[in-house]
Amino acid sequence: MKKLTGYQKGINLGGWLSQCPSYEKEHFDTFIVEEDIKTISGWGMDHVRLPIDYDVIETEDGQPIEEGLKHVDDLISWCRKYGLNIVLDLHKSKGYMFDKHAVPNPDLFFTDESLQKRFYETWDRLIDRFGKHKDIMIYELLNEIVNPDYAFTWNKIALTAVTRIREKISDATIMIGGVRHNDVKSIPLLPPPYDENIVYTFHCYDPLCFTHQKASWVENIDFELAYPDSIEVYQEKSRLINQEQGGNIFTTKLETIGPDYFREIFKEAIVFSKKNDVALYCGEFGVIDKAPIEDSVRWLEDFNTVLCENHIGRSYWSYKKMDFGITDEHYSSKLQEMISILTRI
Image (cartoon, rainbow, N blue to C red; front, side):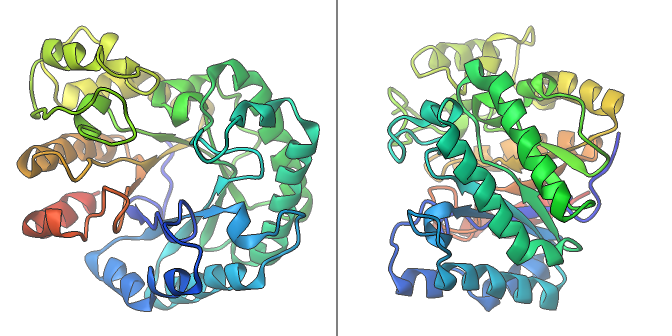
């Protein structure tokens, strides 16, 4: 299976330039600083994933916001200094984001050609600005396409974006994810890669009933759940919540959750990867800070084991805050153990 060298062990910088709790200068100047990148490098990570929202770097009419772009420049400088690579992830485009509370009608993006045109133009500007850093950067087209009804449409949009980027830089590494929130089982719905510098990405918070327990934004999930436990228990809890991201638990024939569960749900993507000689990358995974910490570490050990078995690059969600922050107080007693797991290859 093709290996994504330099992107095997990373962490997300969620909440800085995307899903921002504040758009004030103080937030952007202090949420992530050079010392954070030094820390991440010191842990033994090889890259960071940087989610960015279009409205941090562009005005509504598409003009560049220099102050926002400068933060990406700063990150690039810090990463070069401390030997880290970067996944530049467009987390929100004008008219599209996975969070329906942030964009009331995200499906409009797939039918409105003006929004698609703006998406291409945003990438034109990003490549013009940051394409020269292709030696340490992967360009991720768009975070988490949700509606599976638009799988074919998204493939066409992604192909157009890739073609435009290729006109500017022939060998930039471009990352593309599938539908259902980049579900791993959506990888086979993507077409064979455009060329050898395409990477396919997925996100995995399976089983959602465990990793998102007590999450305020998920309905009917105000319960505590252990890891591991029987598949029956996980299925029972999963029936209570929105199965948009939690449906994989109902496809398994296993009796107990564990590494074999992840081997099973990754299987089709791995077969696809080998057949098409395309590297896979897990751009997000983690456990909410409301879950029992010992169980969270066990989940992380099992999940990471299967990623390492298959040389799948990955980026943990997230470095700080965002309900999943590894450096927050909740994880302080297990931080070193978690870092040891996350930096294993």
